[in-house]
Image (tube, rainbow, N blue to C red):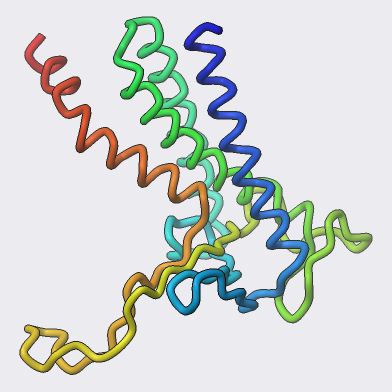
Length: 205
């Protein structure tokens, strides 16, 4: 099997996994529902956000949401083009698959924004229905991203001697995120930790 075909299967597999998890959450849980997976350290906690990574929302209304979605679509197209270029240039496999992870993550969350508002009704105080008779909860490009992975590894008050935050209540890791966010984070970390020389070499050329 060629590297290009392996990459296509890799990307498709990750995208399917991301969407299967999100659709299961959307059709089995209401906003705020929580399942303990590993005690209090790992929970499935259902929230939705307007498209920013790790549960962060956009405060710019519908226009800001559409602008963010359009920007992301452009970014995905650029990353896809760059991956194709890396394949043609026979770049290191690790670099190619790291960018593929970033590509998968971006597409996964864009899909939510583009289609979830059309495909599902609202998840507040009810379990959403797929293709509801009354239509979805939002127009095209204005759907919300489904997040569910929550790792509150430490909760408590910071010691008084800690600068700025001393005595304040602390929760780590507070953001709730999804598999697509994880793909992006892992891809970036791999590039930073293991493939910095690839970019340094290109600068020297």
